[in-house]
Image 1 (tube, helix red, strand yellow):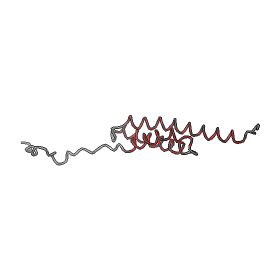
Image 2 (tube, helix red, strand yellow; image 1 turned 90 degrees about the vertical axis):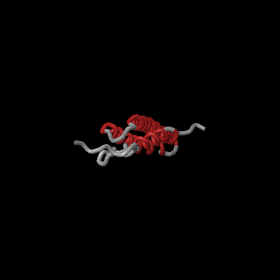
Image 3 (tube, rainbow, N blue to C red; image 1 turned 60 degrees about the vertical axis):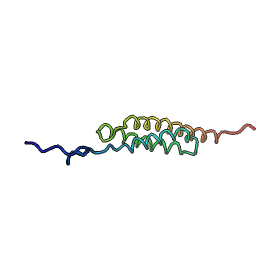
Image 4 (cartoon, one colour; image 1 turned 135 degrees about the vertical axis):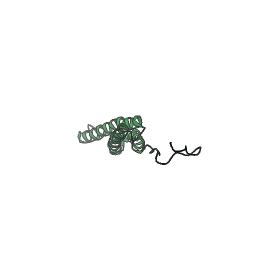
Length: 105
């Protein structure tokens, strides 16, 4: 004989599902998108981009393990973080190089 089913609307004890932890992917996406327009703001885009890359990678790992359900958000954060960090580094490099060039005024 088996145990009777639980009352309607209740889950049986011991069968609770753990909620997915989607925080890393979401924060990665936000930081990655923000890093692109902030690339020209004294290195803020580079810092945001690096943070988005790290969090995006960690979010993709959680999604691959089945602990998160937003692997696409983590992937978007990872890619936009790379783009924002690259633009920020190019901006810093460009402003540094052009500041040492002689002016012809």
